[in-house]
Length: 210
Ligand code: GRF
Image (cartoon, rainbow, N blue to C red; front, side, top):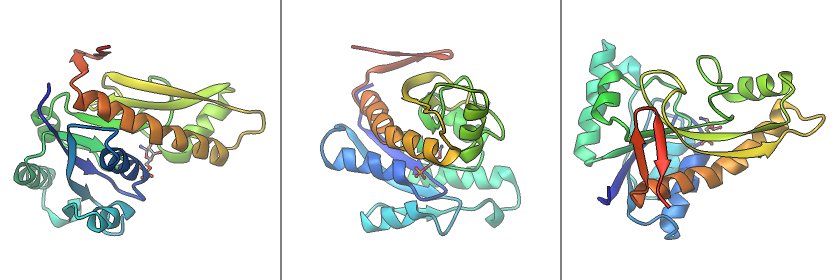
């Protein structure tokens, strides 16, 4: 794949990963990619503000604005089409991504998870719950994972992982901070690989070309 990545970012919160990716694009570290829009289910999301400041179309699309899941999903698809998006980056998006969107963007949706998948993923494993579980399990190492999104939470092909040590006396808060720092390196790196056409996905396995 060497077509330009036209990225739609989905974010629910502060959007620091979105910002890290945007900065890498603006700095020229990621070539062949553009953020064409930001979608948030939360009108107060920092990500929407960052988008507006950078002249990126920003959309507040909430499930509450629709009767049914299917209406919500098809509205998102309409917006994605109007933006000509061909790639979706989930950056702290706290809503499920509908099956219509997943199959339409098969292998073209990525997420970042604040632990080393396949461990510490799945339902309920978000935010500080993840870090608390890692510490409770006595792990000496944690990290972040960029993975492809499929129909099962935190299940799709793993693209990249990066580790951080879990120090003695670590708390969920201190670990969260350390992991977030490496997320800001890992996510732009993963997007760069996709933009350069270096990621191939076969079934549940992603391979990175040299
Ligand atoms: C990150 O910790 C990420 O791993 C998780 O949600 C958080 C989003 O943070 N999926 P931000 O909104 O990008 O700052």
